[in-house]
Image (cartoon, rainbow over all chains, first blue to last red; front, side, top):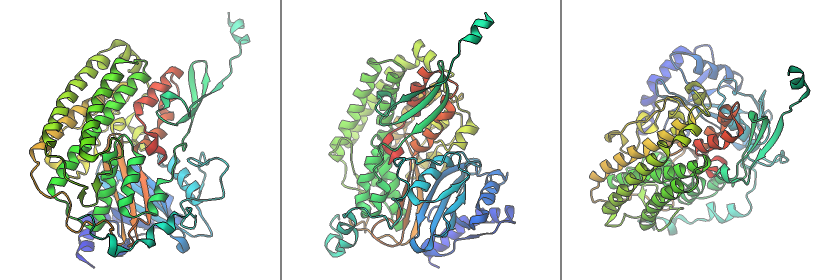
Length: 183
Length: 373
């Protein structure tokens, strides 16, 4: 591992130990791969079936007390499914943690966490319309940002086209021309 | 008497407010079901300003993304840009020149001032005080925006921060101009205090209305002044200091009741704190570079991910950036304060009178650009 990775792992070790000892019966693991590492928070992976149980523990455990859901979002991994990302914060202990779970492409459903944090409500609706993920038992599963009648196209998936703009940008840039122009 | 009461049947009716309603601060629509004057339910409809900023950023290189941040949060552009460039810098593991950091801090706090002036004026209008407070606060905001124009060349969409520092150095008379503007802002805050905080009609209109307690506010994921008004001592500048906030002396303002008045008053006091911060920052300004070594136009970040949050005028402005080693984000999520704060509106509005709905909405201080992105 590089220095950066070493420093990052050391930074999050205390919190990792705490979570590991407090929540023992749920299966989860810590990210050790430098290319996937989070530069800001401790990153944990939980299996899809355990995620609700795990998050409930994270919130209700007195030692951890993650009472604040910063953000809930998703990442399209194309062939590898869709990752749901939860950003939690403990206002009391000032801990941050990022929790991820992977949904396979053939089963894009997961239980809602609106019963744990009400903040998840709109975030889940957004993920649902943008990525096509179904949240079981969601109290209000309508579209949030998109028109009500669009239910078969998911704009934030990588397979969704964005006019011609992608051809003009991105790969077309020649780094040798633009590099250093700003100096 | 009781018989007559039985005969008069009342029924709940639906009232639609927005999206084109001057008090909804943009294009926000709420469907209220009301029983007489009392609100019994609220359904919020957002998305009228959705432009897909996240998807667009995924197709453009890192420098081009800065412009999109301006367009999401168009009343506090510097704050929005800051989160974004800090995310890129963290992935790149960049060292930022000290001068650039101090200037960033000054600009971000000045932007907080201008955003809060906008809030105070518009909030007055929501409460029915059209005229004097609105015009006074906009005059002060205009002075701030003039200063931003002198620095960046733009009145609204600055695109001034870069990953690695600033686009260019500030003008030579920067310090004297900032002091000049602060002097008039101080007077402006005093004026607002006199016109609104000590106005009995305003107090009657705002106290004990739209209450939300600390536990609910946290559960809804609220942040910023709206959360602090409920008595939660949470300010990202103190809790997880970024830039040089750990070297600066300032107070976190909290309210007690979590009502509309507290949300207003917390912001007004916060403006004084901002002035305090800027005055201390000015003492640290030394000549030097404003762009880091190795900050080029076409950056390529190493793979990894980062979640950066900063304290914007409306609360936590978070950028979740996932990189797979290209010159553009693989996934960019903008976590805006308004989005989470607006969710809690239902809790505050249900049970109050229909005339208060506008006041309560105004007190959360939403910008639909950041709610819809």
